[in-house]
Image (tube, rainbow, N blue to C red; front, side):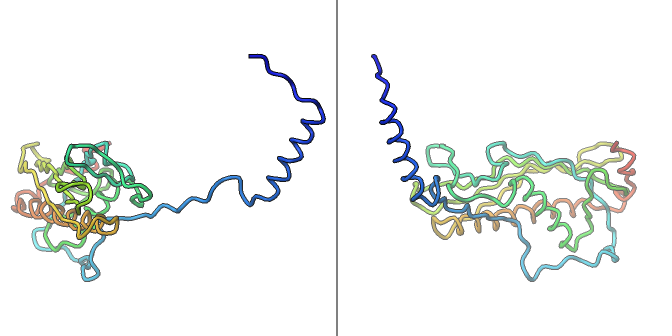
Length: 228
């Protein structure tokens, strides 16, 4: 196809019209709705951490390994699953930070608030640890079990492996799970269900760790010796 060039006068007129049209615009880009940010694993107002200066009888330290998390749910997008298994993310809404980080933060706060003997320490912290705790989050999603317009059910499943640092023997290997039905198909209700399910599964994990606390476990090795 042969394209004919416009006369110089026509080009100047077209340019002038473009300048006039842009002068009447406030912005060249349409306004966008701000993204709503949510979080989970927030402790209740009545929960309070124990006095750090006082250790419960039989207190022992637990070294936490990095938490495994499903890649599709590990980021800041809120993951949902349809009855057919199709994965989608809620538009216009995000976690305030990556879900994997929020989960670990919630775990640390839950251990701090729990009155049991287990005390969590991270890799690199100085102290003697009796147990090694490894968590692998297998499921972290909101399932639309009854159709796309129904209130979804949040499902969380975590494999919890506890080993004795002294001899590397397995103390406990369990899978804990929790579900929470959202009150309605709204983002605020869904994130609240995520919060409830997270708190439930964390309570199970901490209960399992506290349950393996015989006095002999306090003869752990130094975490600083084990972690370079």
